[in-house]
Image 1: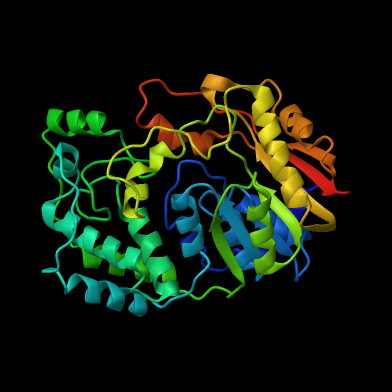
Image 2: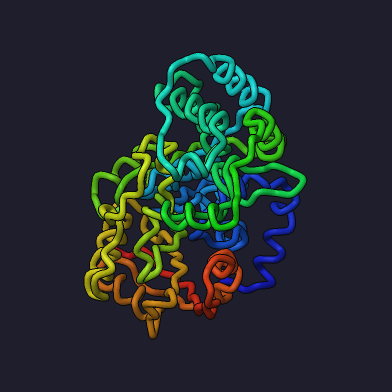
Length: 383
């Protein structure tokens, strides 16, 4: 069992490091850094290999990097893997700024720019043109890989967000930071309030963020983010090829009922090469059509991951539920998914409720939702 006093003692040295990079790309589904960092600081050996098969914005992988541990993150969302990869590279701010400036000096280059009422109101034309130039350069692979990964993460983090009164930190008209609004709703919102997109300095925002997030050195580690489905055996085999057999899995699957985590990132997905419209399909997501199917999908992940773990490896799963699909016993759901997989449940602990994680949702929903209870389920690999 992880005791709070042990975690606090273990975190003292590590938290003195600059952890701002963890905030490079706000993401709707995320857990606090002290969750994986506390576990790994207190319990992981110096040569441990760390996997997160539902990496989201890469908090587990960043915690592993802070400790100098080899790490792999896997996610079906290319937005998630791009955010994660940005936390595993170490370019200098000058490399990022120079690459961006070189791209933007080619403003006469023809580039495809999305059209329509949404795009006209979401971004000033000159800002959107500059973003499209950078998008094109990243998609064609004309930038050094470590610089491209960082620039990609910086752009994703600033792609949409609130319009500040004095400081311009985001490229868009008024938007949430963590997920993209639906086009029709956004257009009505902007028109109803007579909001026009700001003409911001794209390079200045990139430069400020480059210094903020990459100005301090972090330990260099062997690690990567893989866009893939952890339910597929080949995905875990690819991950093992990069860092070897896993010693720790620290993760948080999408909570039961969270069905829109891919469509909710549609603008960021566009920047990474996707369509300039919302794809409302749920291809690649865990099934939420019924509890049994959801449990079966999780079981596939645990079996696939276990096949590439060292004997005695540890799995820690943080899990809860959302308002429209409450789970009476989240711990029981996870424990059921672990049955007959080779993972033996060792402990169940109550985590803090999700009040902090719910705040951003509450800012743009009329009715505030109650925070859900979360649990941490610990298991040991005993095939």
